Image 1: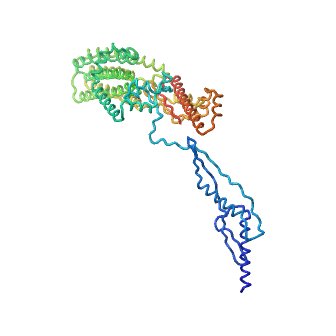
Image 2 (image 1 turned 45 degrees about the horizontal axis):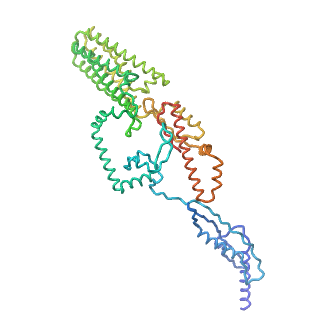
Image 3 (image 1 turned 180 degrees about the horizontal axis):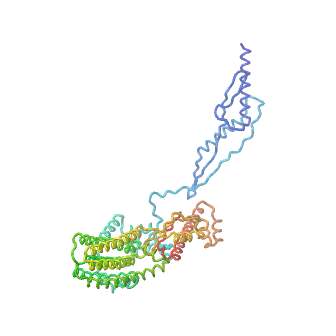
Length: 568
């Protein structure tokens, strides 16, 4: 019994020494959990392995005031565990003499990462915002004398006529408004009072305009304005005024001829001339309204008023001209009646043919001149509705000349055969011609009002001009819309080359002084101040490059009036 127990004890001691040797021996890979298998005699043992992987890292967060925070609690514990583990690996069993020493300790490498603490600005941050003097006076109820005491900052102007303009810090303006009014509640009451006064002023706008007119000579004109009357002595305005005078006379004489003869065709001609006169008066109103200067409610102006007037004119031609002509022709077919002497009708139609032809020639010459200036053909200029007012006059007068010919032919057949149905058919023909013209006018003006794209060749020229600039890497989402009257709005998202923009900024700086500033940077505060200073200047340089590109586009393409370049 005792020999067997002694043998078992010797086997256990040998097995324990073998386990310690395995722990001290270097292994090519880490073991996890119960992985070591050993065999002694007929018994197999599974021994635990404590060589678990340990990853050590440390992150230090620096704030803008130089404070340091260590996020290394886990790393510290990990280091302690690593040292304990290393002790286990390199330890020597004091009860077993002669065992080999373990390998020397390896140094623990800790990676330190310094990052700037993120500043929380909140959902609304306006402390660094700039506002103009006009906004400061209107929104914060201040006087111009109140702004004299505030800091004035010169910034790059968004307007083409000025390079720089003066702005104020919003925080300074808010503090000054509280100083003037005492409390936010008093400021809110003053804003409400001024809003009510503004509403009352708008209600009495007519009376105020009359007062301004009375004192116009005393105040004088603050800026030159184009005379509306001068627009009707040249270009489309001249064509419209000539057409109004001629069509008004034609309507009067055709109406007398219809009363004398009772001809359905003559009635259609009289209605046609009346419709032309009313529509061209509407065109004149559209031309005068399109010359209005832009206001806050209509920042892009009133150019589209010409297209709106032309669209209403087309609808009027269809309703008054085509509709009444068809109605009178159908009634003549259903209830025919004999036609009286047509001599006076022929004379009036001849005079109408001459006058309508003269107006037609005036419109044709105006369109040819405008099409030549734009580099377009006569057909392209008319179809694209570049000048809606002249287009309406052209088409109305062309339809008038053709309708006079149709009416004269049908009246001649009626006088030769004595059959009044030919006269009614002539009325239906004039109505069909007017309906075709009105449909064309409605279609072209609707397309113009919807905002169609410019010609692909012109869009390609604008795109190549942008892409050929060194600060532009690529452009995307290009949109060029014809706003009417040869005014184009261009929009594109531009991918700028930051290196070229930075080089443009460095070319304007003293490099030696900049190098000295870099060498003087020793702390995090100095680094942050250096980066904020030159970062803002580089952003201003980028804005100046955007303004330069927009100015180049407008100068090389006079049709481009509004350019929106978005930084991608």
